[in-house]
Length: 450
Figure 1: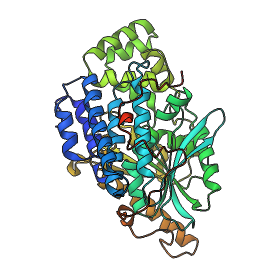
Figure 2: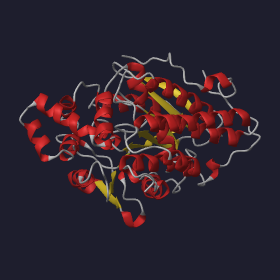
Figure 3: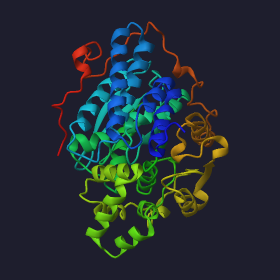
Figure 4: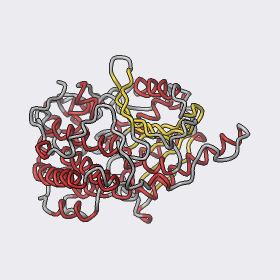
């Protein structure tokens, strides 16, 4: 165990698990977590923010003349700012929710600006809202390549997706487009929007963008959903046939039943009776003794933008693939976790509903990969997930009479950057942020959308 508080253990493993893909370093995470008392959300924020500030100062001292060192320190700082924010959402008036996010975005943008192929932030107009996205090109040839679209879930960001799956895809010669919709970190903060069940309203505009890019092979676009993002991805695939493959890490079929299953029988009974006030009081009392419940409810109220635990569970009824799963025609990889703490049994339900359209793969504790979304086992998880998608691309190539793997480049080249490479700044990135010591204190005047 990384921490005697089980919820803190899981989140520490989540941060630590990004180390292989440039998101963290081992000893500094372990040292930080060791100093935090069980259930102490304020302590978690304070210690991870201090670590992030230190890494940001280190990047400033390193300077862009050492591109790899600068990039790594900025990626680490961004990840630690995200970690510092993680347990704050139970109080949506906390100004740090936005000031820490501003800091993580600044650091992240400076890091992706010095990648060999810099990430490009884009904004895609949807019906009634904007979709923030980042386009990562696998190379500079501008020729069409297979592409993975990636979205996170209940609590994660598109920036995190680069470390969970994005770099693994780029190493294999795949383009990557990460994005967020209503309820997710950037859209919730900047547009004040809670989750919507009709995720095709998010994905279809992203696909419209992809169809216009010469670097993207429009016949070889996969959609990867991570955690609750897997339900969102499958929902979108039911309504947009341009998706060539769906990758669910891990599968979710019905969010309401998963939420309800996590409740004690007495609480579930109160909800079924429609006893709103007694239910809310009972949940609030249970939250006092449970780190997991205190975080989960606070995060849910914030991301779904609802006022009470009862309203959260009512809203969750809309998040289901019942009635639409038969419309999914794309081949679908459904991953499961033998020791999933959040959605036990949901991947099997999705795989069963899809039938022959699904390939089910269960990660287990025998491979140290049985946790939710296989945190801490990212290399193995990506071997399974990316190999499945590469095999699909090879099959499509054969059907089109192309050499198998014609679209892909040798794995591993992405990881190497010349120390003398010239950084390319993203539009709007302030080149002084990394070297201005005064910027290391988060701006407390930063505000979010209501």
